[in-house]
Length: 106
Image (tube, rainbow, N blue to C red; front, side, top):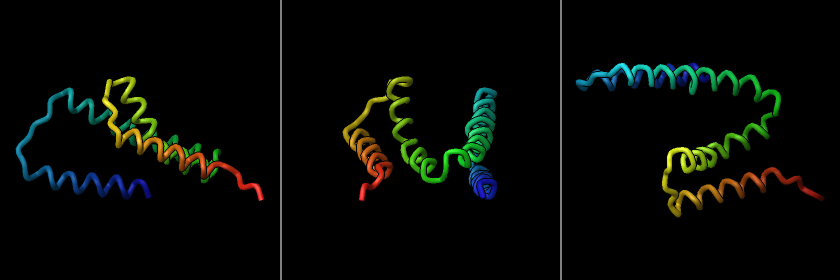
């Protein structure tokens, strides 16, 4: 399924890029290759391999809080400023994850 998604994005992006005049520097090409290899291919393979180990419910909870981890890392590593809406959204996601992970006692 993921290969069809990647192929669709590649084809649409290629057609959209044909309408404009642009050039790529060597640094931009290396950046695209790095993101394609590590953020897409390697991360996807690791996800597929270990999703079986942790189970679908735990994997869903982990993927739910991915934006929260991105927010925290961008704050500490990149010096991003956190707005009220980002903080509220992170709190909302963490609360939802906590509620979903609690076992019902009945």
